[in-house]
Image (tube, rainbow, N blue to C red; front, top):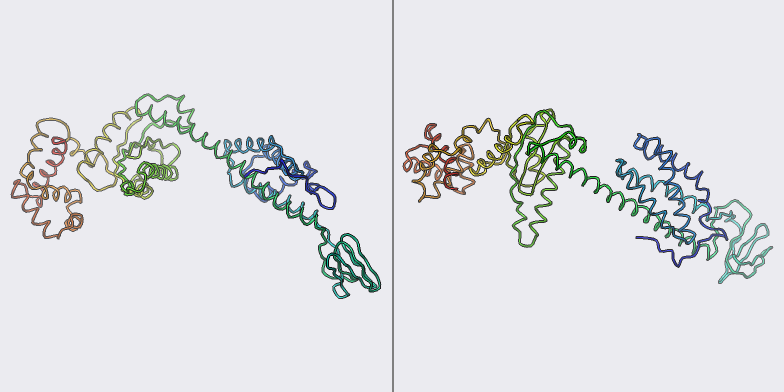
Amino acid sequence: MTVDSSSRSSLTFSGRPMSSPLKDVWSLSRHMVGHFVENVAPCGTLPGDAIHGDITTITRTCLELAISLLDGRDIPEKTERLKDAAAAWAREGVPIDTIHHAIHEGFKIGFDLVVTNATTKTRTNTGNSSGNGDGGSGSGSAGGSAGGSAGGSGSGGGSGSGGGSGSGGGGGGEPTLTLTHTDYTNLLQGAKLLVEILDTMTTAVSGAYVRELRAVVSEHHNAVHTLTSALLGGHPTSTMARECGIEIADNYHILALHIPPHPDQANPHLDPTIIARRKLRRIQAALATTTHTTTLSLLSTDGGTLLIPTTTPTDLDTLITHLSHAARVPITATTTTTPTTDIPTATDQTHQLLDMVTRLGSIPGLYRFDDLALEYQLTRPGPGRDHLGTLLNPLDHHPELLTTLQTHIANNLNRQRTARLLHVHTNTVDYRLKRIAQLTGFDPTQASGLWYLRSALVARTYTTA
């Protein structure tokens, strides 16, 4: 909302501009800033030079804006200056809640001054006679006086007619507020206008702050993206690092992530692209709150790469669990640790390992290269891999047996969990495992047979791809 003052006249009260209490902008702005320092930002949120410079100046600008609007004038350059200040605060990292608290505290001070100045209090003795008039008559007692706003008065019990109503007395009763119709109307209009002024200020500050913050974040994101791409490509430079404000570490944890689709992406009534982007934003937000600012990432809605310095105290397993909760889908990840100079090669290997894990249908979670070195080696091209891939050919005509074997191995040979996932009885799982042994010659319930069958599954995912 913006205040339209093109057709608004100056608001007055008792013949004086309603903005009168705000006219001394220099002393009032210093008073307000002192109040801000003591009550809004007591912990040093705002630096001293800002308090005595920009903050005081902008407070004065806000007062001048309020005065001009109360006087029926709009000064666009004042609003623009407020926007410029908000943008500068965004760049300097001043919290937006501190800014809004300061605006509202200053507004309360100014509002109180305007309203207090716009009221006149008289005292009346409520125990003596009182008078009222229909359309403006007044009456009074011998010890008192009565007021009509336009004029009737009386003494000794007499009455007179006038333009207002009044009550009379000579004692110390409750104070009452005496307003003319014009003053009452202006007071209401002034209260509404003050709320509009507050809206103008907060809207200007919020809009400018958010726009500038987005620009700053975008610049930083682009610089970090460039640095991450350079590290993954083996071409990092100290110049890039300085531009990002990030020091390149000597060693990194490399994490390759597979992010499955969110269930809502299959909902025909929802836009899958929007759902996927929201999922990614939740992951990025969780990553920002759980890892150090030196963590680098290149992520899409389907997955990507994280580079975390080994000096950063991070529990990688807990991190993947946290990211999965944020994404609301189970994330699968693989990790290796490598010197910075070997990042390109290590990243390729980590993603190859992730590809193998997803091909095997392994349960979501974090897998380390050391734990799957044998399986990784089995994926290398050669006659050994080709031969292992043929060991499961007898199951080609029994897809339910192949599915059972894959699920059973992926669930660490847990028969109950395998049965639940396949929606069959545990006895059915036992029967199928026996059939696999009969058809292939390798018993999945024995260590030697299981080793060959697991190796065959790894090789088969590549020879049949």
